[in-house]
Length: 284
Ligand code: SAM
Image: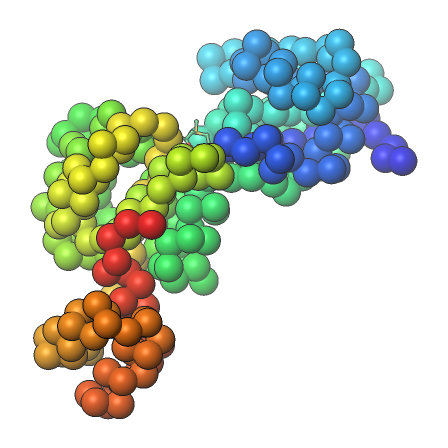
């Protein structure tokens, strides 16, 4: 049986699939004296579904965060346990919570972060992009100039980049991505963990066209994962002739076979060819 402390518990919640809440997250939410929620009405159905009865809820969002942080730290100092949740995913990842945690750290209050769902990490895992180093960039600016400046500032970023984006903005963003990054690899993940989860694997200059082929593209939520800058891009070591051969063979043979044949024919690395093939398949 979990023993709650007078502390702040950071509790991630599902980003779409209700089953993705952890056993420990359920326990903490059931036992916490107070739950701080970004939107209390939004969180009630989830809390009810995991058996949290009549929770003591405090609303906690971007506009009242700084002011509520004092009140919540006082509640913890009076001997209570407080759980923080956001509408979906991990609090503080493009969600409120930073001021509250900073206040807890400053006052010496214990903070227990629980691991759990996060759209950025979920998308990265399926992207086929390097995951040893990555940079989470949050939401992109809305205005065209600010968006172009932001993306231009990332051209030589050597880590994989992750952005959150609203579907209604994706075509504008795709246009600027194409201008700034040309044929750099990109992956867009839509509706992760949900019934209509879709991943689009392509290059920035083809993104608009690839998305346009899906009549449902404007529905749901999205993450963009952009390949890092490479001084010598791996694709460049694969000659145009080898790429053409892969394209031809792909219609006839399974990917592994294609890569092992082309690797032998052109003296290339199988893994490199496999990465190339994966990232040039448009939709999944
Ligand atoms: N705290 C959340 C997390 O841990 O991922 C993110 C909150 S942020 C306000 C919401 C954004 O996350 C959405 O606009 C979208 O970019 C991304 N997102 C959330 N759920 C998603 C999903 N199921 N599929 C794709 N993107 C998602």
